[in-house]
Image: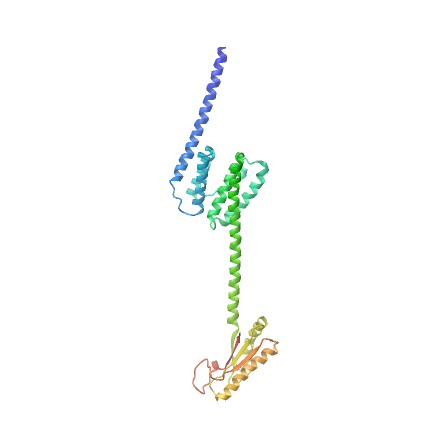
Length: 305
């Protein structure tokens, strides 16, 4: 009888020691989480970089776990993650393989783990707010799935990371479309500018000649290429001369120069409307005075309208 009583007393003492030990461990953990949160509360969270934003998210999650859910272990863990992110600028997305996730949803968590990691790599600096909310929401989702009894909290955490993941995808898509439109507009502007610059060409004539030398005829190839692309545009050809000779003679010569180019283009099957003008010596490129030879003034301008 005495032995039996002593044995019962021993078991009670043993059980009591275990309870005291467990309580002591939990108290230490609780204390660790508390002091980590106090440290985090001393930080400034004024910056909008990804590390500051994510640290703040982890801090608030740890506070909720400690004071609302009374989950000292997870509170301590996520307070620790908040410190790591803030102090070391390191991000560790929770791996579902490290959590006791229900088998029916494990594959889904792994799929999103890969997608989120890829999203982080590509958009961490572009959309820091959405990335921070996505990461903290995903980590919260895994933690709640492991506990697997707070259905509303599981849904809330999943919705948080999914909404921000989808928001990032949307922002990336809109940015890509915008960049594409800008590129198209830029290319069109460059093309239009090039067209305007390219399709105003000047050719030069030898003294008292209305036909072009072979070197100058080559320039008309550009006009032919342009005309085939811009068949809806008309072409104006303006002939000029230098001041050597009479005004009347030079007016006739300038018209001959313009008409020579017109006939040449038509012989190349150019169907654009072609207008010719002769200005004689009235619009020189270089002012020389009367009865002077000047090769720069013996010219014709070809302009697309």
